[in-house]
Length: 437
Image (cartoon, rainbow, N blue to C red; front, side, top):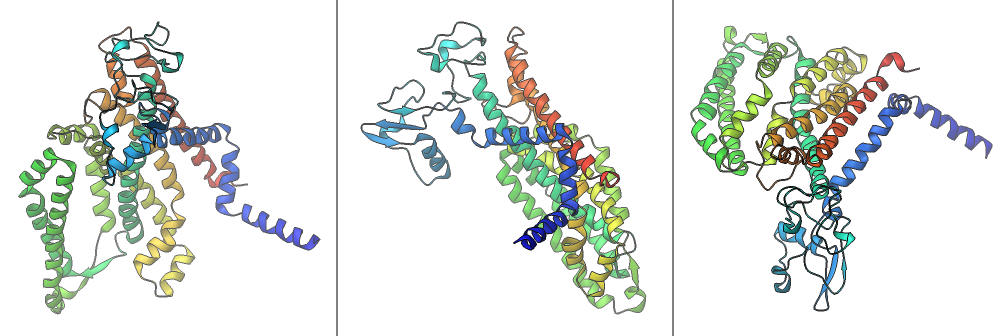
């Protein structure tokens, strides 16, 4: 029995001495980072369960002796797999008293307009309500919309913006950074004719896929995000066709000795120049240009644009890590075993290079939330009925005495951005090799 306990203790100690075990131990020493991580768990929980925390629909109710779960039913209706019964179709959820009902913590949705408490009712004013249960705890805006409900559902928007946009930028940044760092300027070779044909046909394909079809792309973008993605996929197919054609033409031509000579492909230089071009274009200006041609603005479109324009930092971090990793022994061993380059990159090199990327993602989420809030404050990229932290602050511009419309959403933005920055700093310190003692 004693030997088993000792063996278990040794295993635990050996696991604790692993890289991530050391990172975890170092991270726990930073109390601000630990509390920030707990706060992240809290706001993710609020965002995920926003409909069950603030809604004018009850969680459970009975109508004509029939039991219903309106919030769950709403999810099914939105998915197109169910419909509301006829006795529920015209129900005013907030103003109807049911036989039996269980309401959410905040009995208002962010779009519900309480006309009895419109025109900026503060949290401390006398409110025209039937009972204490229906009080607007953080006040209302000019339309009578509950600020607390907007805060809760704005949390969901903020989390989705951070997660979706950074997922897109992380995917793009990791792919570009890994290719640039692993191959460098001399790690990838191809025949001379294949190299020049790919460059020539790439620009020809780019011309036909995007410049010739620019009208179709802009028209689709103005009519909706779904149509734009279909047109974008079609443009990418056209570009891929030209690249495939270039490689097919190169097959017989590379048999000519002068054309078949192998040359180095400067992957690192090309991707580095692409990063510099992207950094030279202001993200805000790019987003404003794209949103300007949209007939129907959408928060989802803003998330995608932020993701497509925020990958450069992650790409630079990944490239720097791959430049260090590619010369290590286990990479040489993988190459000696005959593993393909794709497998070596994504199965061996990349998993050991993501520590710096996690730090960039933490800071990137904070930046994405702040950028979306700025756009919402300016009324860009969101519909009038959408409620976000930034759009709530906009309401305070028309009536400066409505301090609660500026204080509460502004405080939420400040705290969220701060905790993600603190989380990023905590990860930076925990992953610093000089602190692994």
